[in-house]
Amino acid sequence: MESVLALRGLVLLRDSVEWEGRSLLKALIKKAALGGEQVHILGCEVSEEEFRAGFDSSINSRLVYYDLFRDPLNWAQTGEALPGGPLGALQAMCERTDPGPVTVALDSLSWLLLRLPCAALCQALCAMSRQHACRGGGPAAGQLCVLGLLHRELHGPGPMGALSSLAQTEVTLSGTAGQASAHILCRRPRQRPTLETLWFSVLPDLSLDLQGGPPLESQPHPDPHTPQVDPASHLTFNLHLSKREREAKDSLTLPFQFSSEKQQALLRPGPGPATSRIFYEPDAFDDLDPEDPDGDLDV
Image (cartoon, rainbow, N blue to C red):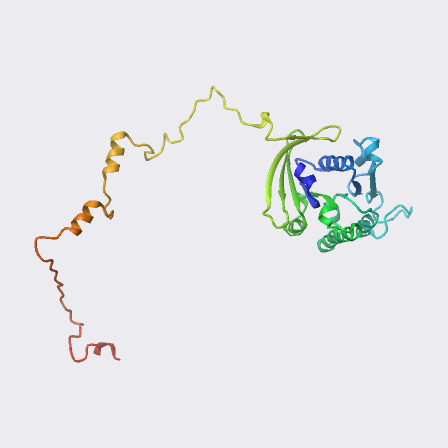
């Protein structure tokens, strides 16, 4: 997971029904806030109170929250809704960021993708990177990190492929809350993509507990009372050779093998001159006219 935080650009967190990725999204937000970055959050699927739950007051004070959950279409006309709908909210988030490292969390990209055309959403994500690069005076890949939560069971291959083509990092989550795995695909400029698998758990204080491999309880342990079965015991052919069979195999000369005996036989002159003859018996359709040997071809 450290490799995810080291990269910038668009990061897709692709969760599943078995493992919901919002807890990981909040853990990454906490780490970015503790690192001194600006953190802007676009909340769509849960209320602001529910999303802020689990953060302490020092973290919550650093988060800039944009609420699309309460009144996304401004039906209540309270003046609290963001103008321009979801696309306007993305535009406002980029305009309100200051130069420097910024983390933008979208909770979630699936909510946006189900209400916006895929092409419009991809264009808005690209525009965020370009605008922030212009404001910061540096490359967007080194300044902006967009964490997008994506429920992969809700979308077809077309939208998923379009967002994947824009992402610098894809994190595919699986497992359970206590035993979660992250398959991390990183695309770096002018380098081959790398794939890494990490096992982790999210602690109650939204900290990440990284593990180098699968938990011990999930690894298969052999039962000492279970008899071991030889997989080659019921084959119709023998995989092993005895000593006598191996010696016979090594001494066998293949029919088309150019052995030293055949080489010496070809080089050793015979008792007399080698002669050969060709026997040919013509049939009724052969043309034996020496004056016109191609007469039967009608040329």
